[in-house]
Amino acid sequence: MNEGPEKTKQARNGLIWPDMARPVILDFDDSGPPLSPDTLRIPLSDWQESIRFGCTLRNYAALASRLDGLMPLECGCVFTGSGDYHHLSLYLLRRLARHRDLVPGCLDVVVCDNHPDNMRYPFGLHCGSWVRHAVALACVRHIHVIGITSADITLAHAWENYLAPFVRKKLFYWSVGRRAAWLGLLGRRAHSRSFDSAGELVAAFTPVARDSGCLYLSIDKDVLSPAVARTTWDQGVFGLEDLEMVIRACSGKLAGADITGDVSAYAYGGVFKRLLCRLDGQRGLDAATSASWQKVQLAVNARLLALLRQTMSV
Image (tube, rainbow, N blue to C red; front, side, top):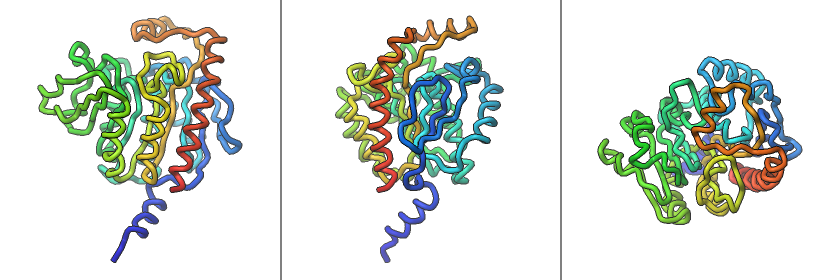
């Protein structure tokens, strides 16, 4: 008996997004207006100093408790503003696992990012360290970080990468023009693939996504070339068409998604975060430049949201 349609129906009633679920903006930094009439904006500006870039686990837990009382039961794509908030993806994954009562190993996570986000951070949780925590979730089978061009995965920075996710065989790096050959020393050479172009990477990744079960997609727009949209972090080489091909490869399989990488001007009140941002090479922005760049970002957001909604209804 052909069980395909019935299994698809079960998936839609379980893990896969409900059709046309409303998008949500976690508004820490006022980085843009609603993207559609049904967008839910949750004001969080009073958390900006404590959460942006990095935070203690205690502050993160306090924010999670606040969000639990504000987030809708079902939501579509979640926009988190500046790439300084990419660690909110961990909360969204934990919420999804709890809300959907996900069984162990049922979910693959696709992270489009110029950085591995698996870097050591001893002070709590950081926008560049959250992947290590996400790997530890029982529902997560694999995490694929795709589009990396950052030197973070090279031999000189190997010691900064958390190794446990590779020892557990749950994390994979997909890069352009960079190699993590040092993973061979751990017997994990197959967990890093390097390509000469974004197009070659996406072509190789597409069948992996299509052969997966349920997927969660997290997009940091610093994976895009600066010619497409500017961010405050060093950027990758993806064109918008490369990112759209990744989304299409996830069609009919998405249990959730988030988008970060917008731009906003902010001056930290504390010396510690100002110093960390400078050491990480993050560029500062004046308000006029931020507004100009964000205008382009909003157009990219609208285009990505429209495509994500199409994949939700497939």
